[in-house]
Image 1 (cartoon, rainbow, N blue to C red):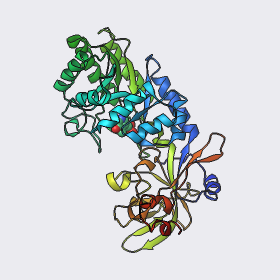
Image 2 (cartoon, helix red, strand yellow; image 1 turned 60 degrees about the vertical axis):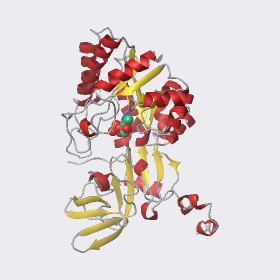
Image 3 (cartoon, protein in one colour; image 1 turned 45 degrees about the horizontal axis):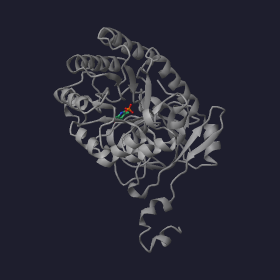
Image 4 (cartoon, rainbow, N blue to C red; image 1 turned 135 degrees about the horizontal axis):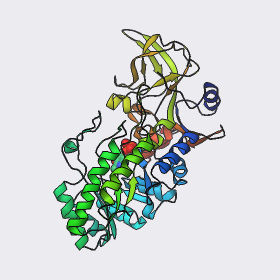
Length: 424
Ligand SMILES: *Cc1c(COP(=O)(O)O)cnc(C)c1O
């Protein structure tokens, strides 16, 4: 089983002659088709809105494409809020789902008119202090504790997760907020990350819908939205069955009709905060084989490293690899594909069966469109790569330039050797 790149070797050669590897590349066509299907799958819900999780891929060009389909921004820090503002998304277009939040960020969000989603009951007071009074519309993040039964490697254990309020706290928080003048309430929960099953959202919806109906009947609060947050995953491995967004949408609808409609809550809007699902498959890291090493194992060294894509190094995550131009050759060589960090975990693949790799071959690392570039860092003096958009007509555009040493040294501008540093 295999995965097919969204770009050919010839196109990559053309792009690399202008923008040298490594770079992240995004597929505009795939992004647009996917967001259209997501909207269609949830169109039964009148108020449905996706708030793209900015942290997944904080690029204004890509956020603007999603915004054409009505997507807002899910932010968790001031710079993410600033980015949202810069692309013209403010007011109800912003969901501020932060945690461990510095108090001044509540004020910044409130000044933009964004919806504050409280991670903790103590933040009621913080928001009051920061904003003068509580906004009319607010949300709380819920964590039921225990174990969420659809398990996966990264997050399957809400009882161990730092996010959200307990059941007891969310009742108390809603009561306090109502008394302090909040008129519209939302509930948010993120219990499982990267789920490759159509059951996660419907199961989560059931939990949140039942909670919402009970909060309404016990406290008389007006709940206007329920935010299923992120967590719809993508099949990183070629043998995995992808999620069917239409089955997921129908599953949520069923829970809605069984629980919310009878509770007289048929005007509740469904929100999502998907990141990975929106862009993951529509981005790739393209890198070049520049060294080969035959010692206790067979190594291929590439010009990208974990600083460009951390998931394999920190989670042991699988990313499928295609050697461009060798799609039809037999995979009869076993390689470790490594970056140049002085860290042995800097391997994009371990013991991976691939076609014979020659120096100069382009290595296409799949599914890097979310939580890829954005997790990058500068360890070992590594510079962040460029980001390229492959447009629908086959042309390409640089949507972020690669870093230069000048960027790396920018924060030394307070020293008098700064000018010597940046001349190289
Ligand atoms: C990371 C995150 C998301 C997006 O998660 P994905 O797994 O990319 O869908 C959504 N909401 C919050 C609060 C997050 O922290």
